[in-house]
View 1: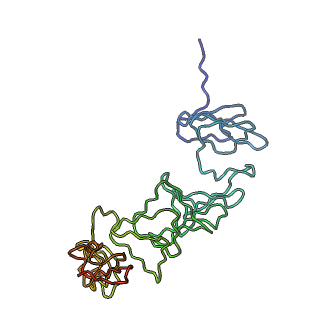
View 2 (view 1 turned 180 degrees about the vertical axis):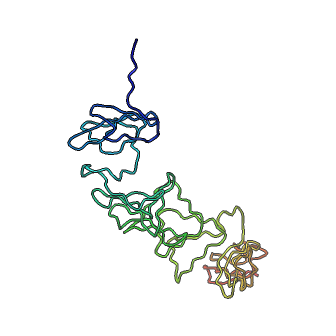
Length: 295
């Protein structure tokens, strides 16, 4: 009959034989831990463990070939003998900290630079710099204030740049294209304004006659106005017109001089004001130097 050979064994968890328990060449097993032990004697007897699946081994393992594994478990604190390119020092680690090199073999977790898989956070007033690491950068000026800095120019290229909120420009602003302002009030707080256009259009977008003009302020919200009174078809003055008025209340009309040949009594009605409201229009007859006033 076949004979069953049983090795020296123990069913006590974590029990390890001593050198005196084993003869040279003898094997022992721990049936709970799944480990196999043997005696090594290189002048100093010791007990060694034969590697088995899911077992933990204490001591050194000297391998001259490659090791292939799904992962390595542990903190790596006892790893030595790595090449100079390996990391042998890790400091300042915490959740989401980004590692930066602090030496040839050392890295440090940066508290002011964090990434959670979605958002990158630069804390402590740090900068995100470009190119020469100083001339162009983005940074937090203060809480809720973002700074965008460039050495000479910030170039925004897009079909549309949408800014929601107030825009505060402390330097000069040059607009190379058209400037469309769609608000209800445009305030220009300058000592002098220079306009190169030869003509200005007031009441832009009107499809019929309407009042319009300019106001020189003499009190809060009102002033002296020069404008066109569409009700009488004449240019007029208003000594107290509100800044948000939509129509003139004329105090006087602008004098109009028409020039032609032939007597004034033979001329058509005044160009401005017509028959009813053209009173006061001056007509100069260049044939005989006569001056007529329409009444």
